[in-house]
View 1 (cartoon, helix red, strand yellow):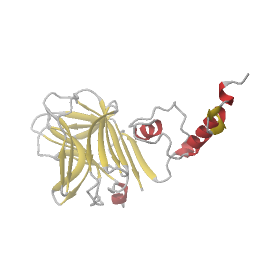
View 2: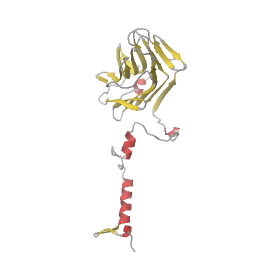
View 3: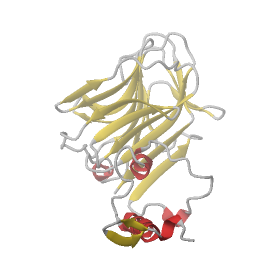
View 4: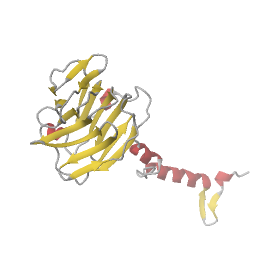
Length: 253
Protein backbone atom coordinates (compact mmCIF):
# COMPACT_ATOMS: atom_id res chain seq x y z
CA UNK A 1 0.00 0.00 0.00
CA UNK A 2 1.33 3.42 -0.92
CA UNK A 3 1.53 5.92 1.92
CA UNK A 4 0.86 9.64 1.59
CA UNK A 5 4.48 10.76 1.26
CA UNK A 6 5.17 8.50 -1.73
CA UNK A 7 2.32 9.93 -3.78
CA UNK A 8 3.09 12.50 -6.51
CA UNK A 9 2.44 16.04 -5.43
CA UNK A 10 0.22 16.68 -8.49
CA UNK A 11 -1.02 15.02 -11.64
CA UNK A 12 1.46 17.01 -13.70
CA UNK A 13 4.50 16.61 -11.38
CA UNK A 14 5.91 13.19 -10.47
CA UNK A 15 7.87 14.63 -7.53
CA UNK A 16 6.66 12.82 -4.44
CA UNK A 17 5.24 14.73 -1.48
CA UNK A 18 8.20 13.57 0.67
CA UNK A 19 10.67 14.86 -1.94
CA UNK A 20 8.86 18.20 -2.25
CA UNK A 21 8.86 18.70 1.52
CA UNK A 22 12.57 17.84 1.76
CA UNK A 23 13.38 20.26 -1.07
CA UNK A 24 11.36 23.05 0.59
CA UNK A 25 13.15 22.52 3.92
CA UNK A 26 16.58 22.51 2.24
CA UNK A 27 15.76 25.72 0.37
CA UNK A 28 14.59 27.37 3.58
CA UNK A 29 17.71 26.35 5.50
CA UNK A 30 20.01 27.69 2.78
CA UNK A 31 18.17 31.02 2.55
CA UNK A 32 20.22 33.62 4.55
CA UNK A 33 17.14 35.82 4.91
CA UNK A 34 15.04 33.18 6.69
CA UNK A 35 13.43 34.43 9.93
CA UNK A 36 15.11 37.87 9.80
CA UNK A 37 12.06 40.06 9.19
CA UNK A 38 11.21 42.39 12.08
CA UNK A 39 8.36 40.22 13.32
CA UNK A 40 10.17 36.88 12.92
CA UNK A 41 12.36 34.96 15.34
CA UNK A 42 15.87 36.11 14.32
CA UNK A 43 14.73 39.65 13.66
CA UNK A 44 13.14 39.89 17.09
CA UNK A 45 16.18 38.26 18.71
CA UNK A 46 18.49 40.84 17.15
CA UNK A 47 16.31 43.80 18.13
CA UNK A 48 15.44 42.80 21.71
CA UNK A 49 16.90 45.16 24.30
CA UNK A 50 17.65 42.19 26.58
CA UNK A 51 18.84 38.76 25.40
CA UNK A 52 17.99 36.16 28.01
CA UNK A 53 20.80 33.65 27.55
CA UNK A 54 21.64 31.19 30.36
CA UNK A 55 24.14 32.44 32.94
CA UNK A 56 27.78 31.77 31.97
CA UNK A 57 26.77 30.81 28.41
CA UNK A 58 28.76 33.64 26.75
CA UNK A 59 32.47 32.84 27.02
CA UNK A 60 35.09 35.52 27.57
CA UNK A 61 36.71 34.99 24.17
CA UNK A 62 33.41 36.00 22.54
CA UNK A 63 33.64 39.53 23.97
CA UNK A 64 34.33 42.36 21.56
CA UNK A 65 37.93 43.18 20.72
CA UNK A 66 37.05 46.76 19.75
CA UNK A 67 35.69 48.07 23.04
CA UNK A 68 36.96 49.73 26.20
CA UNK A 69 35.13 49.37 29.51
CA UNK A 70 35.61 51.29 32.75
CA UNK A 71 33.86 49.50 35.61
CA UNK A 72 34.27 51.47 38.82
CA UNK A 73 33.14 50.49 42.31
CA UNK A 74 33.67 53.70 44.25
CA UNK A 75 35.95 53.26 47.23
CA UNK A 76 37.98 56.45 46.90
CA UNK A 77 37.90 59.84 45.19
CA UNK A 78 41.44 59.40 43.83
CA UNK A 79 41.51 60.43 40.16
CA UNK A 80 38.04 61.98 40.33
CA UNK A 81 37.56 65.71 39.85
CA UNK A 82 35.28 67.17 42.52
CA UNK A 83 33.71 70.48 43.45
CA UNK A 84 31.85 71.39 46.61
CA UNK A 85 30.72 68.75 49.07
CA UNK A 86 31.62 65.29 47.72
CA UNK A 87 32.63 62.28 49.79
CA UNK A 88 32.78 58.48 49.72
CA UNK A 89 30.58 56.35 51.97
CA UNK A 90 31.93 52.81 51.73
CA UNK A 91 28.45 51.42 52.31
CA UNK A 92 26.84 53.45 49.54
CA UNK A 93 29.40 54.82 47.10
CA UNK A 94 30.10 58.41 46.11
CA UNK A 95 27.83 60.90 47.86
CA UNK A 96 27.17 64.51 46.91
CA UNK A 97 25.80 66.48 49.87
CA UNK A 98 24.70 69.89 48.65
CA UNK A 99 24.26 72.88 50.94
CA UNK A 100 24.28 75.74 48.43
CA UNK A 101 25.35 76.79 45.00
CA UNK A 102 24.46 76.95 41.34
CA UNK A 103 24.62 73.94 39.04
CA UNK A 104 28.05 72.30 39.08
CA UNK A 105 28.96 73.98 42.37
CA UNK A 106 28.72 70.48 43.85
CA UNK A 107 29.78 67.70 41.51
CA UNK A 108 32.13 64.91 40.71
CA UNK A 109 33.50 64.32 37.23
CA UNK A 110 35.41 61.41 35.74
CA UNK A 111 37.31 62.46 32.61
CA UNK A 112 38.08 59.73 30.12
CA UNK A 113 41.63 59.08 28.89
CA UNK A 114 43.28 61.13 26.19
CA UNK A 115 41.57 60.61 22.85
CA UNK A 116 38.21 59.98 24.48
CA UNK A 117 36.49 61.83 21.67
CA UNK A 118 36.93 58.59 19.74
CA UNK A 119 35.45 56.64 22.66
CA UNK A 120 32.24 58.68 22.67
CA UNK A 121 32.12 59.52 19.00
CA UNK A 122 28.57 59.73 17.62
CA UNK A 123 29.44 57.04 15.06
CA UNK A 124 30.33 54.44 17.71
CA UNK A 125 28.32 52.56 20.32
CA UNK A 126 28.55 53.40 24.01
CA UNK A 127 26.87 52.49 27.31
CA UNK A 128 26.78 54.37 30.61
CA UNK A 129 25.24 52.50 33.54
CA UNK A 130 25.00 53.36 37.23
CA UNK A 131 22.80 52.72 40.26
CA UNK A 132 21.62 55.86 42.06
CA UNK A 133 19.59 56.84 45.10
CA UNK A 134 18.47 60.27 46.39
CA UNK A 135 18.34 60.44 50.19
CA UNK A 136 16.40 63.65 50.60
CA UNK A 137 12.83 64.80 49.96
CA UNK A 138 13.87 68.26 48.72
CA UNK A 139 16.76 67.81 46.27
CA UNK A 140 18.16 70.34 43.87
CA UNK A 141 18.62 69.82 40.14
CA UNK A 142 20.76 66.82 39.28
CA UNK A 143 22.30 65.98 35.90
CA UNK A 144 24.05 62.65 35.55
CA UNK A 145 25.44 61.22 32.32
CA UNK A 146 28.19 62.09 29.83
CA UNK A 147 29.03 65.68 29.03
CA UNK A 148 31.58 68.20 27.94
CA UNK A 149 31.78 71.99 28.01
CA UNK A 150 32.45 74.59 25.34
CA UNK A 151 33.60 77.40 27.58
CA UNK A 152 30.80 77.58 30.14
CA UNK A 153 28.24 75.96 27.82
CA UNK A 154 27.06 72.53 28.95
CA UNK A 155 26.59 69.70 26.43
CA UNK A 156 25.54 66.19 27.29
CA UNK A 157 23.34 63.09 27.14
CA UNK A 158 21.96 62.50 30.61
CA UNK A 159 19.20 62.03 33.15
CA UNK A 160 17.96 65.16 34.91
CA UNK A 161 16.05 65.28 38.19
CA UNK A 162 14.80 68.65 39.46
CA UNK A 163 13.45 67.44 42.78
CA UNK A 164 10.03 66.73 41.30
CA UNK A 165 10.43 65.41 37.77
CA UNK A 166 12.87 62.90 36.34
CA UNK A 167 13.56 63.18 32.58
CA UNK A 168 15.88 61.87 29.88
CA UNK A 169 17.67 64.72 28.09
CA UNK A 170 20.08 65.69 25.33
CA UNK A 171 21.80 69.07 25.05
CA UNK A 172 24.20 69.13 22.09
CA UNK A 173 25.01 71.74 19.44
CA UNK A 174 21.85 71.92 17.34
CA UNK A 175 20.08 69.17 19.29
CA UNK A 176 17.82 69.60 22.32
CA UNK A 177 15.61 66.82 23.65
CA UNK A 178 13.61 66.29 26.83
CA UNK A 179 11.44 63.24 27.42
CA UNK A 180 8.16 63.28 29.25
CA UNK A 181 8.23 62.81 33.01
CA UNK A 182 9.57 59.36 33.91
CA UNK A 183 7.45 57.72 36.59
CA UNK A 184 10.22 56.40 38.80
CA UNK A 185 10.95 57.50 42.35
CA UNK A 186 14.65 58.47 42.59
CA UNK A 187 14.51 58.16 46.39
CA UNK A 188 14.57 54.39 45.81
CA UNK A 189 17.65 52.70 44.43
CA UNK A 190 17.36 52.19 40.66
CA UNK A 191 19.74 51.12 37.90
CA UNK A 192 20.08 53.79 35.18
CA UNK A 193 21.48 53.19 31.70
CA UNK A 194 22.12 55.41 28.67
CA UNK A 195 22.95 53.56 25.45
CA UNK A 196 23.79 54.75 21.96
CA UNK A 197 23.51 52.34 19.00
CA UNK A 198 25.55 53.65 16.08
CA UNK A 199 23.87 51.33 13.58
CA UNK A 200 20.48 52.99 14.12
CA UNK A 201 21.61 56.39 15.39
CA UNK A 202 19.30 56.09 18.41
CA UNK A 203 19.98 56.93 22.03
CA UNK A 204 18.06 54.84 24.58
CA UNK A 205 17.49 55.48 28.27
CA UNK A 206 16.67 52.59 30.63
CA UNK A 207 15.70 52.34 34.28
CA UNK A 208 15.89 48.90 35.92
CA UNK A 209 16.17 47.31 32.48
CA UNK A 210 13.01 48.98 31.13
CA UNK A 211 13.38 51.36 28.17
CA UNK A 212 11.91 54.70 29.25
CA UNK A 213 12.93 57.02 26.38
CA UNK A 214 14.63 57.09 23.00
CA UNK A 215 15.81 59.72 20.52
CA UNK A 216 17.01 59.55 16.91
CA UNK A 217 20.45 61.19 16.96
CA UNK A 218 21.44 59.98 13.49
CA UNK A 219 21.47 63.51 12.05
CA UNK A 220 24.07 64.65 14.63
CA UNK A 221 27.59 64.33 13.24
CA UNK A 222 29.59 66.52 15.57
CA UNK A 223 30.96 63.85 17.88
CA UNK A 224 32.10 64.99 21.32
CA UNK A 225 34.96 67.11 22.55
CA UNK A 226 38.17 65.55 23.90
CA UNK A 227 37.20 66.53 27.44
CA UNK A 228 34.10 64.31 27.52
CA UNK A 229 33.49 62.33 30.68
CA UNK A 230 30.93 61.20 33.24
CA UNK A 231 29.47 63.91 35.48
CA UNK A 232 27.26 63.79 38.52
CA UNK A 233 26.46 67.47 39.13
CA UNK A 234 23.99 69.31 41.34
CA UNK A 235 22.96 72.84 42.19
CA UNK A 236 20.74 73.57 45.17
CA UNK A 237 20.02 75.81 48.14
CA UNK A 238 18.69 72.87 50.18
CA UNK A 239 20.47 69.77 51.46
CA UNK A 240 19.98 66.81 49.16
CA UNK A 241 22.22 63.76 49.34
CA UNK A 242 22.77 61.59 46.25
CA UNK A 243 24.72 58.36 46.04
CA UNK A 244 26.16 56.47 43.05
CA UNK A 245 27.58 53.14 44.25
CA UNK A 246 29.27 52.18 40.97
CA UNK A 247 29.70 53.17 37.34
CA UNK A 248 30.14 51.31 34.05
CA UNK A 249 31.40 53.18 30.98
CA UNK A 250 31.72 51.03 27.88
CA UNK A 251 32.44 52.27 24.37
CA UNK A 252 34.01 51.35 21.06
CA UNK A 253 37.47 52.47 20.02
